[in-house]
Amino acid sequence: MLISKHLGTASALALILGTQTAFADVNAQDIWSDWRGYLEGMGYSVDANESSSSGVLTVSDITMSMVMPDDEGTVAIELDTISFAENGDGTVSIQFPETMPIKITGAVESGSPATAQIDYSQSGFNMVASGAPDDVTYTYSADRIAMALASLNVEGENVSEEDVRFRVDMADIAGTHVMKTADVRTYNQASNIGTISYELDVTDRENDGRGAFKGTINGITANGNGTLPLVLDSSDVAAMFKDGFAFDGSFDYQSGNSEFNVQDPVDGYFSGTTSSQGGSLAASMDGETLSYDVTSRNSAINVTGAQIPFGLSATMDETLFKLSVPIAKSEEEQDFGLAITLGNFAMDDTLWNMFDPSGALPRDPATINIDLAGKAKVLVDFMDPDATAAMEASGTVPGELNSLELRNLLVSVAGAALSGKGSFTFDNTQEFNGMPKPTGSVDLKLVGGNGLIDKLVGMGMLPEEQAMGARMMMGLFAVPGEGADTLNSKIEINDQGHVLANGQRIQ
Image (cartoon, rainbow, N blue to C red; front, side):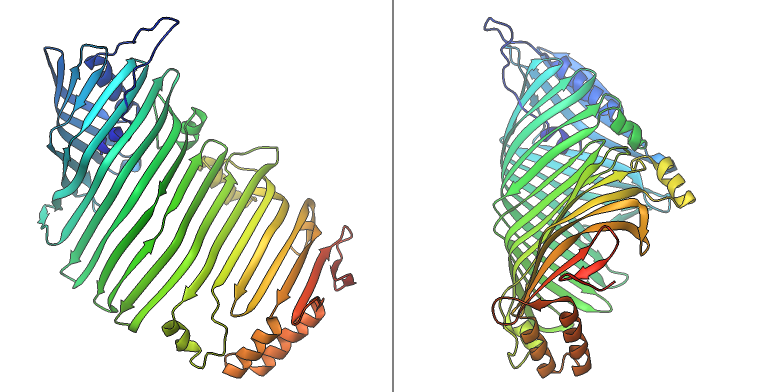
């Protein structure tokens, strides 16, 4: 765990200070003291043996322990040896053994102890620190780094490797990390990893179950920056953000694939493969806003199982999920947004034939795209447990919706397509059918709707009386548009609270 944190935090670049060309110096004790201060600031108690000889500081028998919140026990992590070697030019090389056990002790739900050993191994590893004690730059590289579960003991019983197997391998690693310390810690990091492969295999012999997962991710680029309080109490999230905690990071990859195999004693087996031609994950959070942005390109999935007498497969050109929401109490309006895209989802004919054996429906790829944005007032600090508990107890609303914009709507499936755009504002001082009073309009367009209804009736999937009801609703809310089987609809709510469809009042 320490290795993964500080591997992601490693870098080394000589810093030139002042107007003259001169390197600032760091020594071995500077680097270890900074690491120790970082860990202690994260809430760990650190014990270790230190010895120095000829410019090399060797830190051995390292134990990091932390009391978990809500009396959930203590977690302890034990490491073997880390060396900090001064290079004589104001830089320090950090050295790990080629193989090093990492021991973790914690507790399971019953309160009984659980221990695990993860073997960390590496080849071609190089890490150098330079700069000044309060402004350290690390550079690092490695041919290979791996972590594998070596042993596991739960409630006094050893779990065999045949029952639980876990391993992560990384190859062709290089990156930089800058850590600055003042009133807070700030970091900036960038790394590249050629390949990450993983494997997890868990067997439940008592219930005759098993789950096996493995995969590979290629061409990874990761970047991130953030701020950490010098003393971070993760049990008090509100105080953590008040003290400056924030992060902004991204993870991009060029391709990936996975395999899974699940054996269930009731439902039988379920297995499959997935693949994609790249994607990204970006996330950021501070005391005011939380945001996610997840995408993937050219994804494919193939599954089979005891409940599926034949294999099924599907592809999707684009997958997108984007979310940005305010989380801090404020008297001012704040922006929010949500976007979801499932682009060109295509099923193989085997799946289509399950419900459309005659091929009555067009089998064009389906697309769903929803893009929403708006403004709202947040009336409670969501990061403060006391504030959220008080809100739940009092039954007060957590916020006010002030405006909502439908930037884009597209649902295209089986030869029909519904699209639309519009916007509304909301008056929270007036009520409209149990919600704040809206004012605004949305324009909708449906192409191929009647044709789809006819096909579903012909297939026996839609009863005629329900089809008639759907056509009556379309006649009430829509008017014919340009082109065959095209309907347009403008739904409006005016400032008097009247609901109009295409200019005709319906409420």
